[in-house]
Length: 521
Image (cartoon, rainbow, N blue to C red; front, side, top):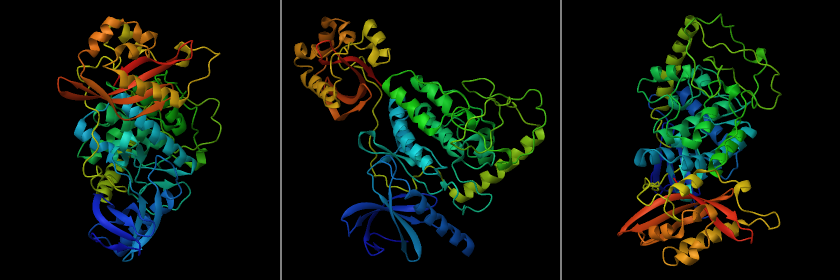
């Protein structure tokens, strides 16, 4: 095992250990040739490995580097190099000062739906690129999503992902993945596919909003895998605008799920405050030819078979075979059976039990980040909304609450076709100017509000701001469609309170940019 100060591959100087998992230890290091900070992941062999298993672990690590290096995306941790140290492979990766989404949930509890959607958009973009490159992640979970400054999200740990067409080196019978976030078809022993990543991402975002994965947690891996295989879960209760997106991502049949690119569009609609599109079942994926996934035909289903919680009816508990992208969808799919025979379920339970035991032995604890660094002090998440949860621009009256709940779209704003569309610089400048004016110069600040926020009246507006000692923007505002997402720190009676706000921007007939709606999350 390497120690602080050691030089790896003649150029990477280890500084401090920053993470560990079932398959590796991650160090912060300095690349002395390029003078940059990197993360070095060393292969961690389990005690009692046979020579054959040791060689298999080496191959898996080399394969991790080969696969991950193929993916270059701004929201995926980059792999720079694969080196060796004392005969053991090590991965040289991008260093991101960050904390995992799992740590944020553990320390701060459930997260606002809008924040989760913003994180999901970034991760879905990276995974869509991975799928285009023929890479399936296989182990999406909160511990593998890293959050940097301003909620910059990056997906990590492609260590047990699989490149389509690459030679598998995981020994037969070992299930790669964290059971609580697996797709039903994977829990039943089928090969992971891009549609499986969609389900796992949905489970991850569900956990961030609801406080736990759809199928719950259970120390008994066999029991948990059984629940996952059945695909039954309670619909989200706190997701609000995220509910339609989550229910599409968590459809039990992989053929019915949106593609990862469509998933990104669903989540972007949530961030923008637009209506979430509904992708028809079967519109994004197709089943492989029958000979590609041989399976014994299911006999007639028994009476009393369970149904699944899903947005559309007619979806049973029979997961589909592995899916593929690119072929045309069949014109008419036969009606899916709602349940399997008792005998087939016994087989499924036995398979789930076997792979569950092997998964636990192979991968150990699943909550640790395994391929990228995390700082010792995680970045804080926004606290629950405090007393000034009306809006940052004005107190919430019934009129303001009604207008701010409406989605902000270009068609609803007071714009004119004769004016040029405001630039990103214009929108952000208006927001920054507004928060420089309040609470001291309310007359000038009032001029930067649109008709929806002005509808509550200037007297109430001024009464609210007289209760606020100071307000400032934390970090940089982020443009998302026609909205600006901004984190604010209010000072009231000597106490500092942070909130995340989504500001709907508009343009007046005179071409001036104004803040028309304000939602706190």
